[in-house]
Length: 364
Image 1 (cartoon, rainbow, N blue to C red):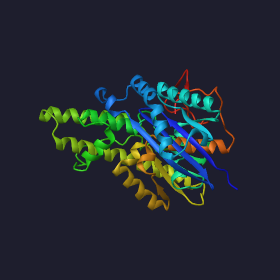
Image 2 (cartoon, rainbow, N blue to C red; image 1 turned 135 degrees about the horizontal axis):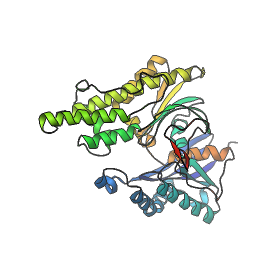
Image 3 (cartoon, rainbow, N blue to C red; image 1 turned 60 degrees about the vertical axis):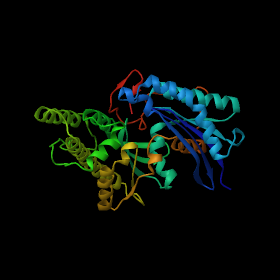
């Protein structure tokens, strides 16, 4: 008889406060509830996420998120088999808020505590939504991260490439501010690009002249600044069409880079001869219409299944955290009250740091 587990998960690594209840039964994981409360209105006046504001908001809303998630799932604390929480990487104030809250629940209710790497939550989402087998290729592309991972097991991730500077989501947000679009920048640029001319501005495709799967987006951002300034100098400002053309040109350059780097990553992955090859994407940028279209076409060419989980499970959420926690708990990987919040926590501990390192260790 297969094991049945019901876990509550918490996520507070950036500017979304989330709680979810998931259940493992008959060998399958089901999401019983998933609650996400965003903070966009709090950070909008500042043009980006303010860590201190985010941390305070998590403290104020975490208990309400858990209460709502458990009510929607129809479970009480007596029905839970454990508490799962994002223990990093992320904004340290937010991560610490979640970890301390989870410790409180675990101590008060005598429940096992499981700390999860936020990136593992994203990387294992295809196992939650589509029950795919190992190994599969994952492109994690979000506001804070961009990396290609071959997922060999729930705790074995092989990084074969990633950004050496800005993450794509971060670049989208900065470009949106640069040309006067709203935040979050990804959806705003995507919408504007629909009526734009992607060939109007000749933007660079960084690192395509170098082998490997590493990426860079800071130079693309600088080129956009110069293109915008040239338009303003010539016309005295930016028209709506200028914004659309700049958006389309930027988005096309980003898509070209991700397409070529994905092609190289797929070649490395397919060399392993997986029985049922799968290329999955996750993270907020996975919702971009142009990027999804080029990656879907690439997978058709390569005879590989393309998988993009629903947007609600691509962006930050607690269901993916609880799902990763179930995998750890089944494997006997349970933490105790010494669990600490980690601002940096690479999934592949053997790969060299790409975004630099410091006193707190390698970044993701």
